[in-house]
Amino acid sequence: MGGRRGRGRMIARFLLRRLLELALTLVTASFLVFGAVHLAPGRPETFLLGGRAASPEAIAAIRAQYHLDDPFFLQYLKWAGGVLTGDLGRSMQYRSPVLGLIEARLPSTLLLITMAALLVVVFGIGLGRLAAVGGPATDSAVLVGTSLALGTPSFVAAIGLLWVFSIQLGWFPTIGSGDGLPDMIYHLALPSLALALYWTGWLARVTRGAMKDQLALEHVTVARSRGLPERQVIRRHVLRNALGPVATVSGLTLSGLVISTVLVEAAFGIGGLGALLESSVQVKDFPVVQAITLLVVALFTVTNLIVDLCYPRVRLGARGDAG
Image 1 (cartoon, one colour):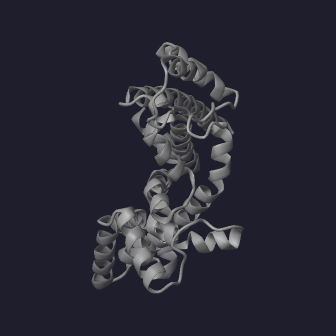
Image 2: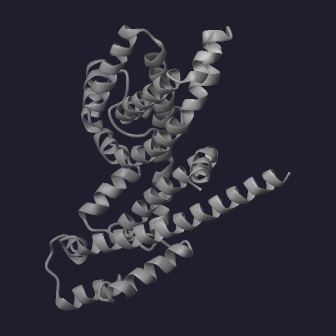
Image 3: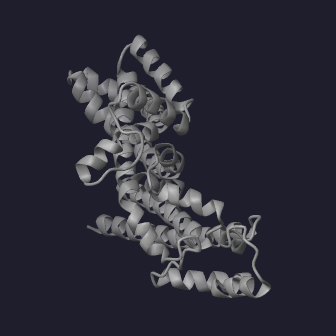
């Protein structure tokens, strides 16, 4: 009973520490992003005027409207305070609330990332398992395939898939995200495949390595000597124990998919968050760039926290051994 309470306290301290780390990461990232956007060359009012000549009074009015003349730290504090209350500011490009812009584009991006993540997990773990337990020929084939996947950038995969399946065969649409869930899934099939290709190769390599490490351990030999079926040995003693690093990499993969959507959405003409971020960077739309970047950082850190909570024994065990 005492041991159970002690482990509960350890998990509670672990969770509290990770939540504090999450908050610190978000604050640091928000400050760095805010500073990087403001230090980038170019002036926002130039983009807002579209290259047209304007009087000093008009320029001063624009800068006053968006608080561009306030000291840097004051601008940051105003923006951060708004974020805490759910106010992400107003877009300079669209002259509308940033939150509304994100909400309108979030469904297509979330569906694209979800479809790509499913492809990565199913085929990444499946190919890695196949390479680890298959023969030398199978292992070599998977290694060659994953090498090609890792060497193909997302935008190159997008162009190739578009040319073959949309232009030549006409099986899929070339642009857009569709209307309604079935139509969106149809429109996002090729983009999700292009987005998943690189990360599938990466996860397959990690799964293969983790399973091969487990196959070399003594407990697997003992399980086989007891006459357990090979399928049961692989499932219970190899794959299950290899899930720690696989889950960690899967969390990182999700964050990588979010970042890679910018190129894929541009290639397929999908009006999601990636396309919004790209256009906002070009015109220095500070509030939109900061909000989307902060959303990506939050997703990255929250995903890592969830992975750690799913496999806390790895972290806690390491600390316990060290003590």
